[in-house]
Length: 388
Image 1 (cartoon, one colour):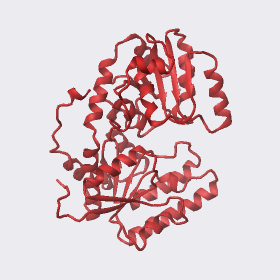
Image 2: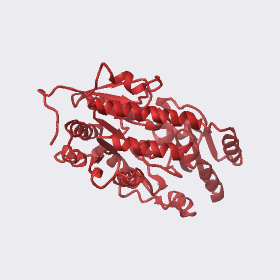
Image 3: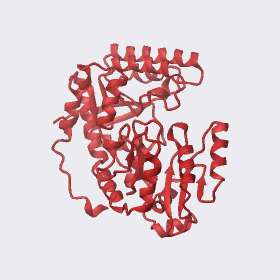
């Protein structure tokens, strides 16, 4: 098992891009610190974001995250130029002997602005990487397929489950208190969609489906920033205004208020049109909520086995059918099982596996996936039922 010892020098890892307000990167960075990993960050808006942080202060590992942020723009020509810049910088990093690890959070930019250019650049980036991290087995298979990774190089694609958000936000309000704060009936069935509203998340379809159910005892909560496109925003607002059972908070939700939305809900509904990794699903699990979502990306691997509320994305009645189950069945055991699963996906284990990927990439080990598996193979899973 690859694990740090007190005698090992700390690994110097460069995260790029890095967002100060991103809880995933914050939690992973803190957990890696316990693995003798010093994480530093670069400026992804700099003229040469990679080389500015690498030349003169070479890191032990370059850890890429949301690669599209480094080159995908609204303008097609700018996207092409920045894509070439990224490939140039990564090539220089390779020549300098800097191992490159890439956590693939999504196979393409969610907005699909310039998919052909982006996919071409991403496939070349994949050729330059020494290791990959995905958050589930289904996602691993999708990454291998989409980026045309050869069977030989597929061993470089490791699975590191997404860490939970338990303790990241306050979680001490009762269901009754939450519903009072949000002016919701105590005996209603409440569906929640939480997070910034973007086209790929299928929120418009969710509101339409909710309206078609025509259940006076059901309510829908939407919390998060609205669509940036004026036409998408106008359409969503119009749909929400058709019934007083759709409650909206189209704006930023402070950390100490997030718990109210989850505590008040019976289930979280995430009707993605496409997804690879979902932090929203992990957040719902961390608050012990059932999740209604399509069977795609990491979701089948991330959610507990009892969360049988997934539906086939090509089933036109799938979303409505699973939402009706929330109304008709007691799904408290599903939420508890999701919470238990979230507890087991702790950041310490994620950091152990990530550290193993770093060391394998640094040493040129071909089978990065096996190194990650060995890192947590002996981790004892304690009794967690008391924490639910």
